[in-house]
Amino acid sequence: MAAFDEALAAATAVAGRVPKGLYIDGEWRPAQGGKALTVEDPATGSVIAEVADASVADALDALAAADRAQQAWAVTPPRERGEVLRRAFELMVARRDDLAGLMTLEMGKAFAESQAEVSYAAEFFRWFAEEAVRIDGGYLTAPGGGSRVLLMRQPVGPCLLITPWNFPMAMGTRKIGPALAAGCTVVVKPAKQTPLSMLALVGILEEAGVPRGVVNLFTTARSGQASSALLDDARLRKVSFTGSTEVGRTLLGQAAQRVLRTSMELGGNAPFLVFDDADLDLAIEGAVQAKMRNVGEACTAANRFYVQRAVVDRFVSGLAERLGSLRVGHGLDPATEVGPLIDGNAVRSVGELVADATAAGAKVVTGGEAIAGDGYFFAPTVLSGVPGEARTVREEIFGPVAPVVAFDAEDEAVGMANASEYGLASYVFTENLARGLRVSERLESGMVGLNQGIISNPAAPFGGVKQSGLGREGGRVGIDEYLNIKYTAVRAAW
Image 1 (cartoon, helix red, strand yellow):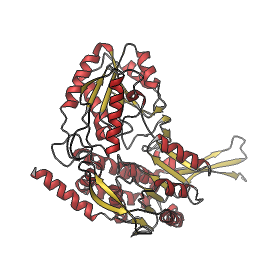
Image 2 (spheres, helix red, strand yellow; image 1 turned 45 degrees about the horizontal axis):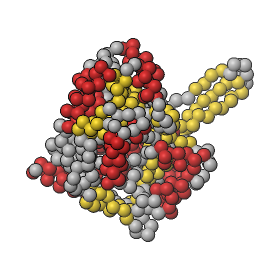
Image 3 (tube, rainbow, N blue to C red; image 1 turned 90 degrees about the vertical axis):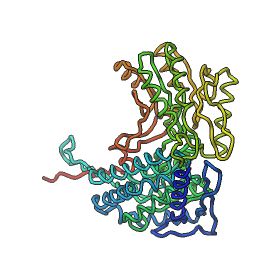
Image 4 (tube, rainbow, N blue to C red; image 1 turned 30 degrees about the vertical axis):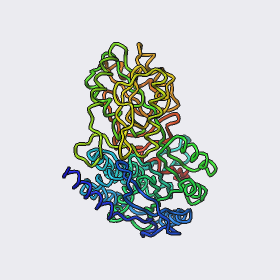
């Protein structure tokens, strides 16, 4: 208990030091009108901070600052832009535990997971610090020989970056890193549930030497109004959003009015396929990772488990044993393995999905209900015999529930896996390499984990197909989302 008390006191102290205002044109300032929004600890439901609640006018001020800074930042030498990101990377690594404690306090995930996220988030700054100096172009002779083709890549311009609550730091660096490396200025709008992590991150960027107006941030409880105003403004050249498909569709509709450049990382409904030739111990461990990372509140989380009939009973038993043994509690308690969900609505939503599945004939093998007491906890859950019409198979769960469905043949498994409007991530477990590659090619998703339950990597392109989004973040192609290609025809006078 002493260790928990010390960790809670340390995280609370960090939260107290984080700036609570808007960061616009290199200055921290209150919201116009003086409004504030509260931030909760989801493990207790108690208020841990109040931050500025921006008006639409504040959001437009942030865009104006980004617009003023754009030209100078675009012509800043790539090495200098990269060095800002490198210094921010080093500061994040040095302050990992402080940032992790802050993240756990406002978001709930276990401290070890928060540490991993901070390290992961920092790597995007390091990766794109190195990519800044690799922005290239081209020069070639036109087929007819009478002219030369000169290609250059230039920054898109001021960008609106909208980040989610579930990975409050990594989703920020995954957008800010390539934008700054490319020479774009940014306006960042974090989720109202978890603004402290992004406020701390912007403080680090300021310390790392980001010039005035290059990075701006506003927090608001009126996200729709503020985002709409920015999307309608001719100074904005791009929007990058991570969040639900429903909100993504709305933003795409608004962006279409100005033919605005977009990147969309939206919802998921990841299938997890286990064949009868799989290493079951490895598959179960992979299932725990893919399902329970971030308490299941991840767009890449394994959402529906398709297991070949010959091994389904052993898989269900092993997975239930693992999930049932996980320690649930406050994320700052060193013994905790599973933290709370983000809020009461999340608990109710997960409970409704479980109730729907059991009403349709599914069996609760372990868990299956909310945990009484303070905070927003739901027991890690395994459901067996889940029918295809159950909502847990058709909808994104965003919680610690693993519905298991048996299959007989490979074609059947692939067909069920692809029977979704989403296509972000998939997982395949088999010891047959040919099958693994064949099924990976057939799955309709932007990413596949073959015999592994964690797929996120700063060096890899992250994104989906179908209604899971547009564009890619991370990897060598991540910076392309923030660059326009210009072609100049040069008359050959020689």
